[in-house]
Structures are given as structure tokens and as C-alpha cells.
Image 1: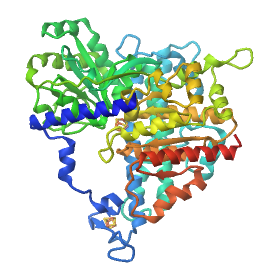
Image 2: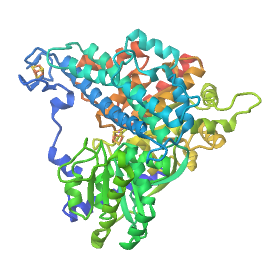
Image 3: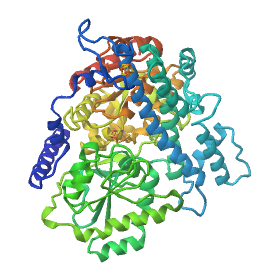
Image 4: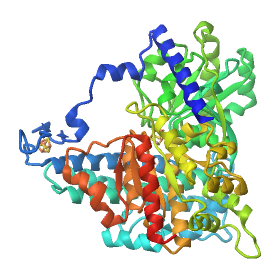
Length: 631
Ligand code: NFS
Ligand code: SF4
């Protein structure tokens, strides 16, 4: 099924690229070709432009040419500083997203647009955080909890609250290393300070600080993003969806929802269901309004509403190339500025909505949370009214699409696991069945396959090849972000895909009624993966680093991915990178990341660009961990 997918998909991709040539449209491939070979200094991380005495670049040949920047910074320091700044930017992005969600919860009200949809999750969190809940209105509780979360960003004392959710052994590692993050913004600011000219001049110290900042993402910003989105918009449950550009419909108004925060997209979903909007769509001659998601916004709305997925990161230009999209609506992150010139070649409106991400040439219609539905309707109306401008002769929609199941929150996974629990023997509602099958070796282990697309690797190929190899070897896959969308497109989140799994995994999938690759959501939802791993470790009285699990980012590209990789390693989980990060210019940084960090956190980085070799390395590392545990 997935081999077929790869070839089908390549055809539709090629067709669209041919169309781009015919229509005179430039794509990322043209720009990549124009860029020629990437800058060798940048690629190795040995270019510094932190101060105006530079830019300085260090000779990649040891002992020959410039070995230090003008200030005397070595290659090790320059590489580590650049990496630390990537971690800070990634952490800032996930966390600022989370902050907005917390603000939305702070303004939630019974008669407003934003409501509390998962009261249980809110009440559980309130009691976890010591907020009084008896005899109180749920919205009063929500506001207090939201305020506590908002204080997590800048509180002057203490460390982050969600760290307490980790297994005891992991907390001890963090204490020993002194990397429990304090306030989220503080960690980001500290890194920016420490990487200023003439501050930290020690690679190990910079990487140590990077881990603390990254933990403020994984166990701070990202976790707040996930938990608060669930409370406001509902904790996802398994549901059917479809993915790939074939979900666009020639007869309907097609709206692409692209970006990250669910607040806007939730309101767009509501607005598109509004009878007034539906009527307007009919009036302009369309059969209806067809929403299609892209990138993490796509994941958020597909998990909660079954909105179809148009595609992942690399397909944003392709979607417009179909000529069938009335509007691309975006908020923040992973949005190509090239959508301006591309949409200009068609009738497509490119609508930015966030003051944090304005793009020259786009139509900016600001989304105001305090009059959310009204703002969303104004945006949807623009799209509908644009239907009449569509040029029939320019429309080409590839037919490829695939179905799959999405929406595996931790709660949903535990509910599935309950199917194999004998309530006379074991308690319901725990992770125990998963721990049991891992212990017994029916599943050899579990991996999280996450991250972006990157033109350095064939689109989705690494994601899919690695996923197939994992499941064939009885390793269950959980996936988020653009990797998760690749999985849906390849049919791997379909329950049928268990025929591609090894016998152990196939049996588990059948008994528990799940696909072998579980879609857990957007990139902030990697916090769900941290939670599951932590729960299994607690159940087995182990540390995360003892478990036969790994994180894999086959086609990553963003700074957010660098932050994620660092918090995953700091959480005790090995991380395999399919794209080499810009660190190879420093032997010391390479040595810390791929070797010495293991003695500190129990996990390390593996860098391997060949997806098949990478998969083999993951499998052997999993077996190594099993051997150590004697299971
Ligand atoms: Ni993640 Fe989501 Fe995709 Fe990469 Fe971008 S959408 S937050 S960064 S490209 S997986
Ligand atoms: Fe050069 Fe040092 Fe300034 Fe960087 S901080 S640009 S290495 S002088």
C-alpha cells in the first residue's frame, strides 16, 4: 500500500511541478537550485555574526586559516552558541503559542466564543496545581488556572510545575544536572544573554543551558499548549480523516488552514458551519465550504473535527498550484513567504491573521480573540466571495488521497488499552497493558517519529521508510507534526496497515483496535509522547532512559525541531536526526551530542542521513536497551 503511495505521490508531485513551469510559477525547487550548494561555513555552524566586529568564520581545516573569531571565540564556542540560539528560538515559538492559548482560556466564558470543553481535564489540572474547585464556577476555576499558567512564563522563583509529572528517577537526573527550568521566558532570555558577545565561552556549558531551555519547551510551553488546547477545544478521540491534495474539491469553496495555533482554526471551523456562510457559498455557485488543513493547524483541526488534511509543510506551494484554492488562511510558523507570489499567479487570497506573522503582499485580516467568531466569519466571507474569480482553465487537482485514523491523545490510547484489561485482575485506565507487551517482547519497543519536510531529503520518503521498518520489526510508532501527515498520506494510520506490521505488533493492533502508527497531533503534542513514556517508566519503576524507546526526526528543518530534540534527549530518550544539524564544525560539540551527553542524561543524539541505516541503528539501540533490562 505504501509502496504504491510513494509512486502515486511522486506522479502527482511531478504533475504539479510541471504545471508550475507552464503557469510560470517559481517553487522552492527553483529557489533551491538558484541557491546552489549551501554555504559550507553555515552548514558546519562555524560562521558567527553575533557582533559587528565580525561576521567571523572559522576555517574548517584544523590548524590552517582562522581558528578563532576576532573576540577569540573558538569553533566550539561559535557552534554551541549558534545551536543554543536555535534552541531558544524554537522554545520561544512553541511557548508563545502556548501563552496565547492560556490567554484564550483566561477569557473563556459560558456565553462567549471560547468555552471549556473538557471540564475533567481542567478540574484534574486545578487539583494538581492546588486550585480550589469545590463550590466554584468552572469558569472561575479556568481563569485561576490560566493565570497560574501565564505566570509560568515569568515567575521570579521556583521551577516549572509540569516537571513534577515526570518519573522520580528523571527528576533526580534533572536535579543532579541542575537543569530544571525556571520560568519559560527566563530560560529563553538567559540563553540570549549568555550567547551575547563575551559571555559564555564554553561549549559544554552552552549545551547544558540549551537542555534547560529546551526542557522549558517540552515540559513547559509545549505541554501547556497541549493541555490547554484540550481543555478549551476538547481532548482528541480517534476519528477518520483523509489526507493529500486530493481532498480539495473542485465543486466547493476550498479554504486551506495553515499554521499552528488552534484558536483561529477552531473559529474558522465554527464559522464555516454557520448557515449564513453556507448560504453565501451556494449563492456564489459552490456546493459548500471545504476546509483542508496543512501543517500543525491541520493536525489540530483534524484531531478534533475530522477536517481533512491537504498536506504537510512541503505541500503548501503545491496546494496553491492546483488553482482551486480560494484562500490560504494562516496564523504563525512554517508559512512560506513565497505564498505571496504564488497566490498572485492564481485567484487565491493569502490571508495572514496574526500581528506576529505579517507578510508583505498578503492580505492581513487580524484575528481578534475577543470577537473571535465575528473575525473568523469575515475571513471565511472573503474566501467565499473569491470563488467567482477562480479560473477553470487553471485548475488541476491531483486525485490522490488516503484515509486514516487520527486523534490518539494519551487518554484515547489508554481507553484502547482497556480493551485487553481483565477488570477482575487489573485496574482499568492505566498504561499497564503497553508496559506488559513491551516487557514480554511482543512489542520490541516504541518510537516517536516527528518533524518537518526538508528539500535535502526526498519528500516524505524518510518518514515513510523508517515507519515501515519500525512496524515491520514490532516497534510501535507514535507520530506528530508533518511526519504524522506523511503517515496518513501513506495509509499507515489506517487500521489495515497492520498487515505491514510484524506479528507481535499486528496482534496488539488487532486486540486493541488501533493502527500500527498512531497520530498524536501537532508538534506541541510531542508533550503527549513525553507523558506516555513517563507513565510507562513510572509503571515499571524505571527511568525513561532505561526504556526501549527513541525519538526520530527524519526530515526536520525548523528551530522548533532543535528545541524538541534537545528536550527529548534531556528527558532521557535517544534522538535520531535524519538531517545533519549545523554542528559538524566543532569536534567538541559533536562529541558532547553524540557521546558525552549520555553520561549526563542517559540518552544521546545519533545523526544519520540514510533512512535505512538510521532505522537499523534505532532497532539495534532498542535491542541494546532491552538487553540491559534483561527483557
Ligand atoms: Ni513542527 Fe508544525 Fe511541520 Fe516542522 Fe512546521 S508544521 S510545529 S515545525 S514543518 S513539523
Ligand atoms: Fe566574531 Fe566574536 Fe563577534 Fe562572533 S562574537 S562576530 S566570533 S568577534
